[in-house]
Length: 304
Image (tube, rainbow, N blue to C red; front, side, top):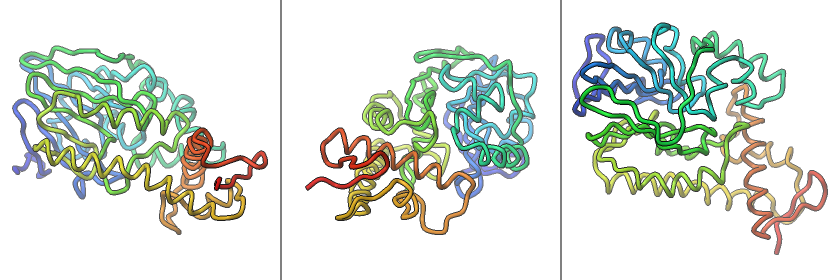
């Protein structure tokens, strides 16, 4: 590991540099990827660490967002002249607060507080000129090519960005963390995340870079083991939810109060709404499987 001029730890993989955020990019920070083509400098996302690495980020000619969330747009204010490209399913969330609010899907009071938070803590600024890309899009940057693989679930537009021919894949919030997959917003999808976790192994990569926690994985066996543990969280949550339902019917509000994904007492603006969205998707999946039944509009029980 080396250090940039601004003393942010970094690693190089050919023309790709990864600058590691605080605690290896633990939320609310993240890991910044910079691709140095012979004629174009590209940055993937812009977590808080983007504000601490100086010209390596500030001189970007192009920013490609793998997805849109508050912790991935923190440095966009520094590169106002650089085009921003976003998958077509996420692009409205980059163009305006109204688009980002729909992306989250929280109640209005939560959104009002969230707007203050993202502006104050994440330097959020709208990019109304953001351009949409689609699955399979490529960017030739001189000596390297970037290819987008649409991998939704975390958000509807979440994409993996592969730097060819070097085999460096930025897998974003398929972050291989102990927390597990996050699919708690309006455009998130448990079903799509399950499919993404099956397909991401087919991306022809030799290095896997996550937005958070893991940072850079350079051994395929280690990647597959970490991915398996990350994926297993989905079925662990299903089992936990069935235990939470117990022998008596439960309302969604009662299940939210018990907490499926966050620890008791964890305080963030979005916690109750994310719990409700996450639990609701697991309930829908279990109902479709015949393992849970809806006994009232908002009351559920496990089937024998």
